[in-house]
Image 1 (spheres, rainbow, N blue to C red):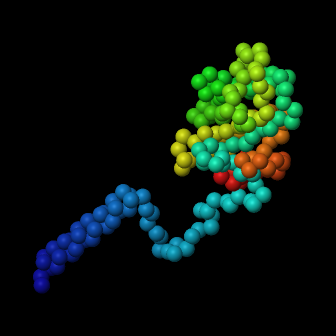
Image 2 (tube, rainbow, N blue to C red; image 1 turned 90 degrees about the horizontal axis):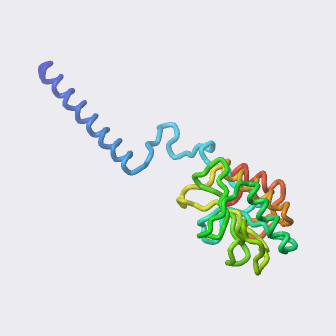
Image 3 (tube, rainbow, N blue to C red; image 1 turned 60 degrees about the horizontal axis):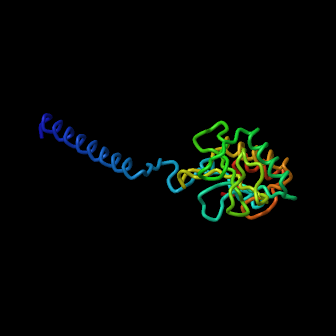
Amino acid sequence: MDTLTLALVFAIMAAWLSFSCGLVVVYLLLTGQEAISLGQKGRKNQDDEPSKPAKNAPVLVDDSGAAWGVQVLFNDPSAETDQRLISVLGALGGEYDSSAKAYALSGESSRTPVVVENAVSFAPLPAPDDAETSYNVKGVSVQIRAANNAMKPGKLQLAHLVKIAKALTRVGGTVVDAQKNPISKAGFKAVIAGEARM
């Protein structure tokens, strides 16, 4: 075999090898899989795993899984409580949505506003211009609604949710999670840190 034939054979083998590797890369890109590095084969890096929520951390997901949030249950519902609720929501920058009969609070991220709605019944929350209603609000639900079920709320959104819930306790209520367990100061810190159960 002369040198010209040998060089031609090596060139054909190199072209075939690069073409095959290119097809593998395109396949991995299209299927969304990652290539495994040789040093990490069969092992998971513990730094890549998200921190697991503590067992006593608050639960933020409702039964449908379409929203993350807490509830503020009022201790002594009355007409005065309703008026204080309206004024606190107004002070927080809440905008009344007449079609949903709830308040939306944008905060730092208007992409996914925090929604405050009646938690105890299907009755609407009173509008800012309502003088009196025929019922008293017994509790409100403070939620971040999921635009996409795969996306979880970020720490900024969770901090905004906690800020609103704490402000609504001034109306005269207690903050509870999705399982109706009261949330402590440590629970609020766990929510803001992203350690709540979702």
